[in-house]
Length: 102
Image 1 (cartoon, rainbow, N blue to C red):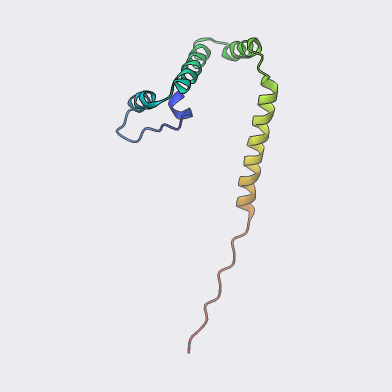
Image 2 (image 1 turned 45 degrees about the horizontal axis):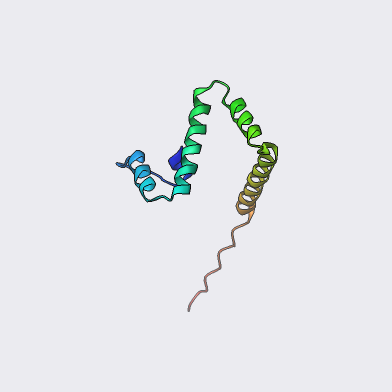
């Protein structure tokens, strides 16, 4: 999950763990810190039966407005859906008629 969030995709025959290790060797200190925090949050959420409750408590402790974030994400997804549906609805241009040569 952490590798996927960073855009690291393993191709066939490659190990995601090795790619993530190579990424970490070249990453800056701030990126490594964020990655560690993300990994700890994901690990604690996966180990607990009520992971959502724990994450919400942690967000409240750090004074993160989860409702505002949820609303913003909801708007972003709806905008993406509208853009996709608009792209699908657009009619394809009619093919031009070929001119006959004598």
